[in-house]
Length: 360
Image 1 (cartoon, helix red, strand yellow):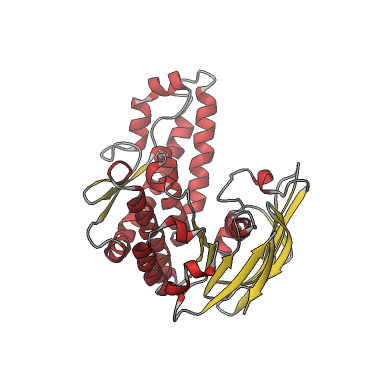
Image 2 (image 1 turned 45 degrees about the horizontal axis):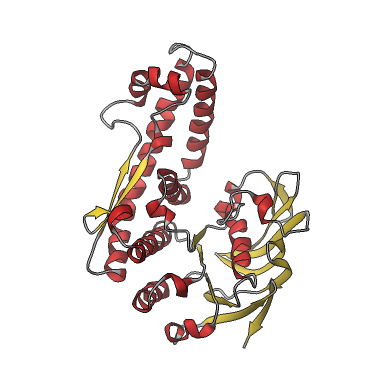
């Protein structure tokens, strides 16, 4: 999968610009506030339908404007597709594939798998469990074709059960939703656990390259006691659910435990070590996607030079050379990365006031 052309309008610092990124490594250089991160957000919009920096799409629209638009040509296996996202303030986002309006951001994710690492990506380690569930679900979605339908069925039943709890429903009243949660919850847990097991060898290999002195361990907790069916767990926690008016067990409470060097990564690893753990986890996802589905994801790296020390940057770039997919990196100056880019074909663009100019 390769973005061969992208046009961006009214995305944060960008008024309007268009350029043709290379199929391999691309470097966006420019001063702080020039629009580099805004351009990464535009790429990410095409693969997720939202910004990685702000979950509310209306906040991504350039100040003083009432709409944003991102359009790109994407090529995979020799087939070209035009992908577009538009958002007018006060209206739902519009998604277009080859000129046809489609529903659901999942269609974007299917067409353009996109991963990002940016200064706040350490939330994967130090943030709440929802951050780690999203990490697991991104990978599971891209390798398990039935995952999304199952996830939607589970979420629909969960919302209905929670609504019933707010009306003082009895355990018998909840039975229809509990049956659906029991079936779909077991499926979701199975998909996630299988994905994490398959991912571990790739994480181990990346960890050996990025920090040879320590190992990463992953353990997926399903969100209820593994030895009992979910329907039994729901019955046992009914009194608590009724008090809190929410369902307290199930895949929506799942947790991915990440250990670094034998200890919890979020409590014992340094900030620099946590950043490298993030790189190991996300690069492992991309390698697993390629090995299992022969698909390359678009990788966005925001402000990589300031994120890592010199030795760590060299190790990350060594791993990126094996990625062989499309990468877009931002930096203030090209000189920050020149020593690492030697021998690596790279297309360099200068960003100023949201406009992009290719450098020769």
